[in-house]
Length: 186
Image: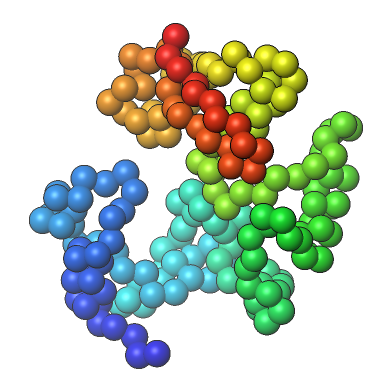
């Protein structure tokens, strides 16, 4: 695959990418973004070859550094066998083995692992699981969620309303178990 020139990348980016936590009209009009071409270890390299220390990688990746050889080998080996499959009613060896290892690390009594692809999805799943738990254990009226004021980053709850609400309002349908619940405001 032929690499695009820096200007081509920026033009495509501004035409098609919605960046997280970004006022896109200002970004498109005023930003000359850093274009990263590759990464290695704790360094990012831009399209002009300059190196940068990646101090922001904790957002989504790089606990071991970018392109860590052991991780890259493991990913390549796994991708040759099976890139991805959903766990809805099926399983596979790598997920079963990883779950077993994680249970060994968990406190006593935690015997099952739910896999999620990101932080916000994991919070959503935890809320749905709590609704399911109460519905199956004779307390279906337990549908309210509370947040600790100023302890949850506002970007996760919506800046415009997070300060005024005492609880999170969400309609939740738990497909796997057929429970329809509504978590309401207090």
